Image (cartoon, rainbow, N blue to C red; front, side, top):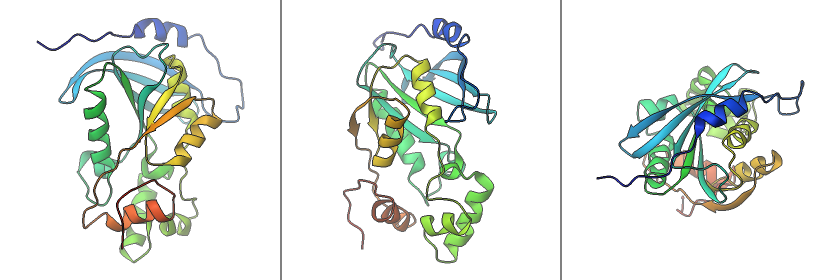
Length: 228
């Protein structure tokens, strides 16, 4: 019999969050509300899934919650940005699906933790532009060069969304599962207390070796594996 873990009273959080109102024209440009929750038994363990609505860009985001995280400190948290090609089709061009499964597997062994699933495809440039970037990469550009060639920055994601979600779940502080120091700093600017980092490194394959090398050498990700 599986061990029972404490469950958050998310229905109470939904009622509480429904009353909140973000100031108009906020700097972040986002106002995220907790809308609904349901039980979610998964191959990675027992979770609850919470649905969030962003009334600025009209996107839905998800939190996969293990145990009771309300009022907790040092909560293990993974921020995962949507990757249709990786998460759904198992693309070998990136490490997204591997990181998502590793996060869910790890947190599934703990008493509590959260995986936030953010609808920010292609580092925030959207699916169409992500595939345009793939075309440019096929012609020889790396991921950073392709984004810049399309008129974007290296990373267009907005972590104010994640900060709002963690606030709605009443998480006091987190240990972030990431290799990206910029993600930690971005969360801190939005008021999230990041008390530590949990590395989540996936070994390179023949198709994503250059992608991971670019992450390390151009985007500053903390990857231990060497690249030629």
